[in-house]
Length: 145
Image (cartoon, rainbow, N blue to C red):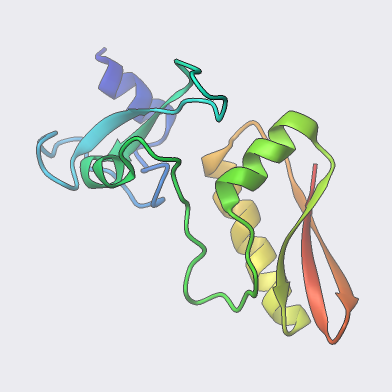
């Protein structure tokens, strides 16, 4: 089994950056084709890290900069935290992190459900739950480990 197949099978043939399916039969030169992305740690000069499956275009667009996993446009969130940073923080320290403010409880529930589902694929070993705190006329979405 090739490294591509091994990583693809482990990641269920989904791009870790955009969370869309990756077609294993596409050419690796096609923008929607598979590629293996080496995730490095945030420490300066660190090498190695976990390898994840990504579309060629997603991997190329990211380049050598820290990846960004976007919040979807359909969610009503204010001041959303960077998802990769939240994952790194919770993986290192555990605890809780405020990730967004929402104007209604329903918006916070929807955002929380999406985020827990997304993190189940982005960081499979990280078990998180959501908490919604009312205050200041809005609702604070909090992730806890």
